[in-house]
Length: 395
Image (cartoon, rainbow, N blue to C red; front, side, top):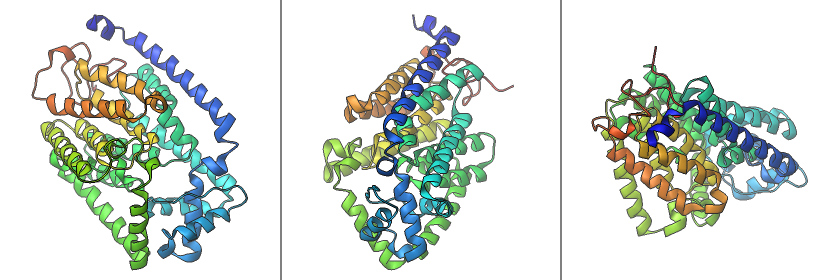
């Protein structure tokens, strides 16, 4: 039965394309109905734009001054709703050039940039031939966490593009550029925090080195701009955010709470993630990066369900690494859980993440996996055979 289903490659691709287009059309409908008319309240770009304008007028020392943030965002016009901006300074640097435009125009430019980042991530990491890749693209745009991220202007897509671009460059033996691309996770670091560590543990020191140099430079510039008072304000703002349930709703901390139990779980996640990366030493960067993404979302105490878009990128990279049938089944089930994230809430998704990370530790390139043969015959570790769920071998 498994071999029969796996052999129906075009049927799977056609089904994925049809489902993805249907979900995308539904997302567009809800965007037109709700999110576009209410962009002054629902689009988080207002926070980025307002704080970027704040730094231009009052300096970076006031970037995390919550009272100054509130005034700056409310000064954008009637109806603008404030909530704290907590992203690191590099995101403000990216948005600052857009402040020369009126907000109504700059939010359109930002949305185009987010969509372009989704395209980069898809082009770089999605597996399969052209038809299968198109199906992955439609599903990528249609799945709710990704679509919601676009609707509310979240920078998750930019981080997804950075991670996917890192894999693409590393796979083509451009480690320094791969590390430079990976440094862009600084825009929202918690959703890919463990990826650099997984790369160095799995033997990709030059990629890690490129990331480290670029990240060190950004940290030094950020500290210089913020100054002593700005750093203290940032620390206080993060401490305040740790108590917000809305920032922990889809994280492990939202289920088990904070304190010693959370530290214990984080320690286990860190060890398991590094073990998965170690198991895949010498077998490319795809699985270590996938492990880093999955581990990061389990490790961080702050996860919004739009951040689960990163799991789609992780899934693509797993599919490029000779996955077992069980892993493929888990990815399919995981996609369904992501689409139903607002219904099933956190626990089923967290369980799927744990199982995926555990499968990366158990299934390694040195372990023969007989049941993966229909999906990934022998060939390049990062380029299994052509199916909807796997790409073509290299020419």
